[in-house]
Structure formats: structure tokens, C-alpha cells
Amino acid sequence: MALARRNPRAGIRHPDGPPDLARLDRRPRTRSPDERLRRRASQPSPAAARLVRPHRPPQRRAESKPPHPRTGRRGAHRPPRHRPRAGPRRPPPTVAEPHNGYPSQGRHSPPCCPPLIPRERTPATISLDPTAHREFLRHLKGFIRDSKEILDAWDAYSEEHTDLSGWPHDDHAYGLRQSQRDADTAEAFESIRAGARHLLTTADTQLAHLPTHAVQNRWGYQLGVLHTALDRLDALHEQWLRTREDLPAKARPGTPAFDDALAEHHAASWSYLDDWATHGHTLREINSAARKARSPLAHSPASASVRRSAARK
Image (cartoon, rainbow, N blue to C red; front, side):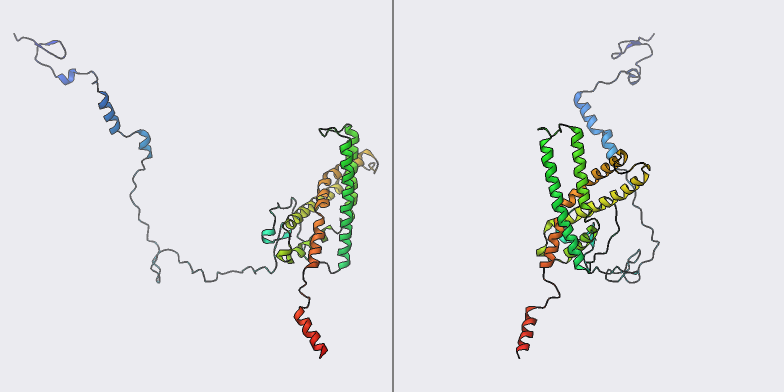
């Protein structure tokens, strides 16, 4: 009878001889900290594996087009840049093109915004009747003077009938006085409403032909403000005409329905009327600068001296 041999690792006896130690050792192997660090460093991390781009074999471009007979290059032939392209060309402008209602003046052009309502461009031509232009400028001067008086009277009333915080003592009386200010300013503007577009068009043309040293930087911006304000005033006037037609037949001037609608129209128009009262003097300044500028039709001093010497002979 064969003696059972003792397994030194398992601690049990096996009568048939020494067993397979690899099969019996099912316990997980304990690794040292240094071995775990070396094993972790040898394996790439999942984040690094995602960043690695897969290798793609190079693809050759299909040679579908034959080479150019003169250059030897493949692809579409492009004509040289100096060769004129087919199609009509836009002729070069002879005068400065208008921008936002006023002609471009290079560094004098202000960064103003386009008008809120698009308007039809009026050809920039000066009226052949200088008397009409002077009449419109005279009405403009009267409107600016009247608007200043109306605004000064309103400031005096507002300062007297409000507290230190700016709140009125009597809201109803304050509102009535404010409506009177709006109505008076609108009535003063009616004297130049017919000639306002003519004044702007003439100022645009005069500003485009002024020499650079005679142009002030603020003129372009102020003309843009006047253009935008006049467009808004024309749109509000058309809106008031439609509102007046929609009023009931019993709504006459003096009735609450008519007076309230008219007061709302004046209140919506007052800020644009104030723009004309504030910047309207620019039209007179541009006209004065155009009159002082040297006319291209004036005779030169040399030719005048030649004529005088010829007359003496």
C-alpha cells in the first residue's frame, strides 16, 4: 500500500501522488504596489485611447481630368486676373453716393443708423429758384426761435410745479400743460413742413461739394438725425390721417374723442420735432459755408489781370 503524500501548499494528503499545483491554486495572486504601478503605466488609459485617431490609408485622387496642355496642371483652368471678365460692368460714380440719406464724406461720415422707415430717395439737386430756398431758410429760423421759446416756457413751468425728485404736484394739470407744449411745437413746425425735404436735399448736395477744410465733422451726423426725424414725422402724419378717418362722425375738434387722439399724435411726434429744433441750425450753417466757398465759375485773378491790361492797351 502506497503511502499518501502530503501536499505542502494545500496542507492535505493525496493518495494518488502529488496533484497539479496550478489547478489547485485558485486564489488571486497578491501583487506588490510597485508591480501594480508598472502594470498600470504599461496599459493606455481609456481617455488617451479615445484621442488616438485611427490610421487611414492614403487615398489617391482620381485622375479624371487630363492635364492642361500649356501648364501641365490638372483641374479647371482659370483665366489670368488681368483678363476682363464677361458681363456688364458698373460705371464708376462721378459724385459721392448717398449713405443713409446724406452723401458720404469719408472721415466726416457719422456712424448713424439707417432710417426706421425706408423712404424714396430724392434726387440730390438744388432748386433753380434761390428765392424759394431763402424763404425756406427764413421759416426754419422762425421755427427754431419759436421752439426755443416754447421749450424755455415749459422748463420754467416744470421746475415750478414739480418737487425735488421731479414728480409733479398735480398730475392732471401737468399733463395738460405738457399737451399744450406738444401742440404748440407741432403748430410751429407746420410753417416748414412743406420745405423740409427741400432743405435736406439742398444741404446734402452742398455738403458733397464743399472742400474738406470747410466741413465740420458733426454736420453729417446731424443731417442723418434730421433725415430720420423727418421720415418719422411723415409716417406719423399719415397715421394721424388714417386715425382721423376712423373716428366716429360725431368726433369733432373740441370733443374728448378727437382731442385725445390728437394729443396722442402730438405726444408721439414731439421728440422728432425737438430733433429739428435742436439740429435744424445745421442747414443754415451748411448753406453759409457753401456761399462762402469759392465758386468753380468764378474768374481767376490771373485772367482778370490779363483782361484789365488788355483794356488799358
